[in-house]
Image (cartoon, rainbow, N blue to C red; front, side):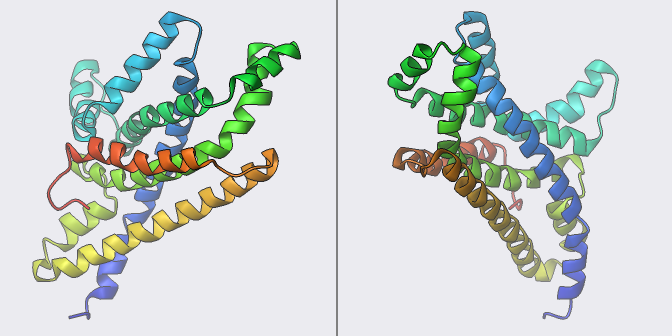
Length: 250
């Protein structure tokens, strides 16, 4: 029964690099967009706030599968340029989870006590200096737990890239192994599950390290409210991904 395990592991590992590239690329884009649009939603300019809100609602409120289809299949028809599958997947992951992250940033900044703003104003700091020197250092600690969960959701969302023929781990399992070893499909998917679990643990370990570093910098740990919000992130992000998930995709 387990004679084929080495073959299964080797085949799944062939897709590991693409899974990592999609996850890391998506995380980088999502992190940048989270701060850009999260802070934009707090702008004094109504136009900037409206643009940021439109981005958040569109990418958070539509299915990842539909977004992938639009970016990879529909957009090339409109612009006359075919996008590389992996690039399309990274862009969609970054844009989708960046919308969720923007709300994390907005909520964390809004949670800073008003007295902190007043103290920064009393020191004659400009708005940019207030944000950079007073507000953001405090909220970074509270952002880490929800971003940890968000990045794990992004990792799991990378499995959807199989529908645009990105040969990541799920594609290798579904299209290469299960097609030829249908009787051992349970073992194949168990191995894929374990691979994703290990990657999720690695993300959590890295984020825990960042949490400790950020805590030492500002001299405190994440608040209970931040941890409660972190528990809510998977439910929201999972609902968005689940709306268009494929049967058999982990």
